[in-house]
Length: 224
Ligand code: CA
Image (cartoon, rainbow, N blue to C red; front, side, top):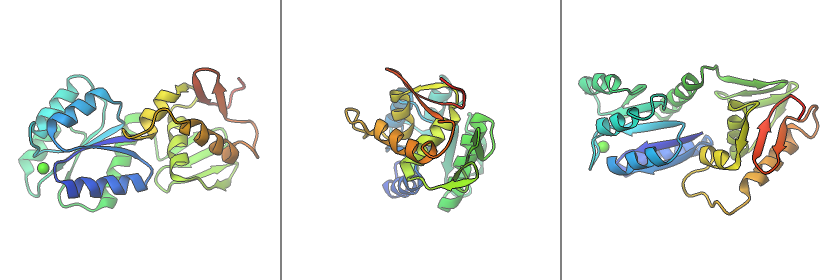
C-alpha cells in the first residue's frame, strides 16, 4: 500500500516515513501544499497523511482539491495540539480521521490500518482459499502453516489479496507497492513475485499466483 505524507516539518515527515517503511508501506513525501496536491493528482495513493499548516497551499485547500476529484482516498490529518476547530473543519472538509501532534507512531500506524480497511470494507484478515493474512499482526499462513515473508513480499501479497481474482498489471503493482523513487526498468516485480511463489505456492495446492501473459498477475484459487 502506498502512502503520501504532506508535511513541511522535515523531522516529523522523516519520522513517519521511516516508521511506515519499516511496516512495508511505500511512502512518498511532499514538503509543501502545492507539491502535495500535485503528487496526489498524478500518482495513485492508498492513503494520505496531511498536515494542515503548510507553506504555499494550506492543508485544507489541498484536501478540497483532492476531494473535488476523489471521494474515497482515506486522508488522515495532523493538527497542532488543542486546535479543536481545526479538527472539526478538517472532518467537515472531507478528512477521514485526525491525529493531534505530538503523537505516538503506534497510534498513527493503527489509524492508517483502520483507514485502509474502511476503504475496502474489510477486517484485519484478508483471505483467499487456505491463504490468510492478518494485517494487524502482520502474519501469513497457508493451510494453517506460518509463512515468513520479507517486507516487500508482504506488501506485494497484501496488494494481490486486496485485488484477489482481478488481473493486476505490473504498473499497478509498482504504483501501490513501491515509492516514487522506484527504478521502472528493473525486473523487481517479477523477482518478488517469484520469491512469493516459492513461499506460498510451491509446497501447496492449488497454485494461487497466476501469470497473465503480457499483462501481469492474478491471485486466484480458480484454475486459469
Ligand atoms: Ca506544518
